Image 1: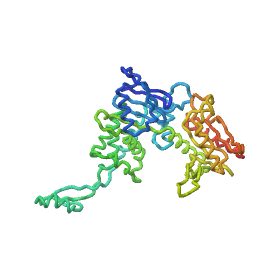
Image 2: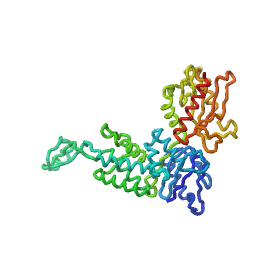
Image 3: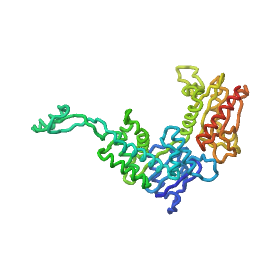
Image 4: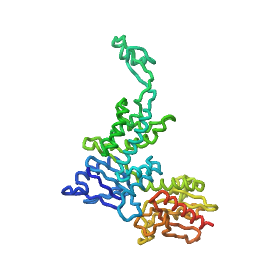
Length: 432
């Protein structure tokens, strides 16, 4: 199987129109990939198809079909070389901080797992966590059982008993309903299903051994038809919370399975994250931990315009900032944008739409003195500080109202926290 690693929004994946070179996809594989993307309902505009290439924008993660696997990583390393290991560590750190995955990046580093593709990392962490808990004891719950048996147990199901026994003159059996302790419940079915999916896609022998052993310990768990429709109903009680991490990952593995059930798509699997949403949630999480006492309600919103005649419609253009910080008498708005800054471009690469949006915040929120745009810092930037002020615009009415564009290092969590701290300290200084 071909394993291809590319950088989101930067690299192009070659499509070999005539013959297979081993470095890209064949034309047939590209068609299978397009079918998979359509079946999963991903944003089609994020997959930029050329005549002989494909570029993936705003999605990171992994797509795996029968003959190839594509790993998409964010370009956030401060090193000029294509250090996929650093990009992978950064992505996993962001996913963990944002609550998408429960994977400890430090554990991966100790076991040299960051050199593996994302799907292998995900499967390894899941299998280790699940097997650890299964060895401590399989979850057993009281389950309702209906059975046509030769002795009375629990309560009689009158309708079923009449239909199956009395109407057929079967007098030595009774249809009963009773509760018994059993491993055959929804949570364990989810684990078995996730194990079977991963056994079809992972190659690491240690991971496969753990998955197979997990299935052996869950051998009394029966088939799992229609589990996708029931998966959100799976819950753990207080005594079962040690399984929380494994269940969290198992659910994501099942959601990642393609809806296409054709035989030639048996191995289709993808788990992709929208990078702009991930970036916003990651920054929000760090701000909450570092400056939670300064954060204002993010749901507080205003409308840019009001309808003059209320009967003709509602308000126009709702403005809802990503984050607001209370800095004394004034507040600041912070907005995270997953785009690349470049000092050689007009407005350092800040889009006109972004500037107009930030100006609307300044105009509509009277107590806001500054709006901050935060962009990721990449190796292409000349500056190497955790946070760098790239540009600042002031309004005509007052120099006390401004828009600032910063680049923020994502190389390490500590660098990002330090960068956010510097930004807030600069804003505090500007307010005093």
